[in-house]
Length: 216
Image 1 (cartoon, rainbow, N blue to C red):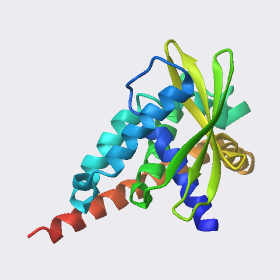
Image 2 (image 1 turned 90 degrees about the horizontal axis):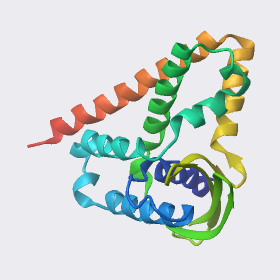
Image 3 (image 1 turned 135 degrees about the vertical axis):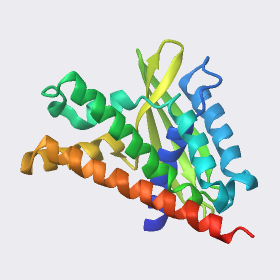
Image 4 (image 1 turned 180 degrees about the vertical axis):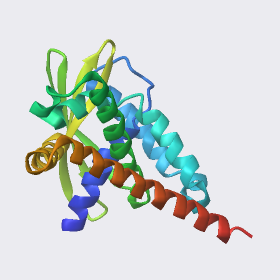
């Protein structure tokens, strides 16, 4: 059960990050469903599942992620009150670093997708804010509730947060970031984030080199 919930958290974030910038017109749920359907096709593409396609696969995911996920809003809300004390340059740097880490964190788990189904339960719209309630159904029939929070940006609805069983992405990061800043400093937070970024880059590079060695 624990593994199922962890997997659903990963999938919820991954699917939110991967929504391609198509079919923008329409209600939030309609946009979300159309996009997720496209993502699932990518995940099930046998040509992209092989190890040798790691960089190609992740690059494709990152391109579509940048078109649907409101990283600036997510970063701002995750940093919370500490955002106000940042300069424009610091904010720009933080959003860029945070977005990169968020993408890599979920994209690196792409291999965990195993045919889970998405059910759309409800939609609530309040002005320019919407919540789309869904359920991720595992192969064993376990239903995990996932809520996507979206903001209207022109004729598009952008995902800025999601929650699994009531625990949101933003709340999770906000707690972590605040603890580091309170016990150390904002500079230390950025340092830790850059270290994590380097770890992701090393892991990706190692996978790519390992795949190349396996090639005949």
